[in-house]
Image (cartoon, rainbow, N blue to C red; front, side, top):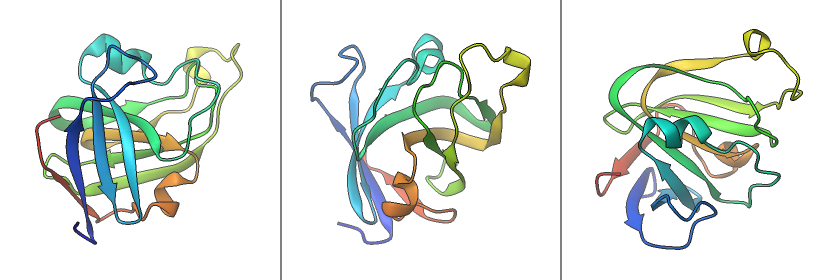
Length: 145
């Protein structure tokens, strides 16, 4: 495949959330399998309440526009890497090892990770670096997520 590019391919495989489609991502050093959240309710639920996230799996959040987007760790039980990707496929920002917060943390005290993006990918903490995903890496979308 492309060494410096990740290729996203739609896949029809079982999902931890069987109502969501799956997307393959060929990262520089790994093949990722991502649940794809395209609606507001799907994006809002995200990876909440998961107690584990296997290696090379996660979620792709798809938005209508390339705009500033904020993510938080409300009810997320595993530390994550958050990858903010431009509409043209360029990785703009990677927040690594974003920690979980206590379930009783008031919403106003939960830290936000914000960057301009059309797509956000969430992976288990440490995956982005291990898989060669960093700012400036261009992800090539082989099909519309």
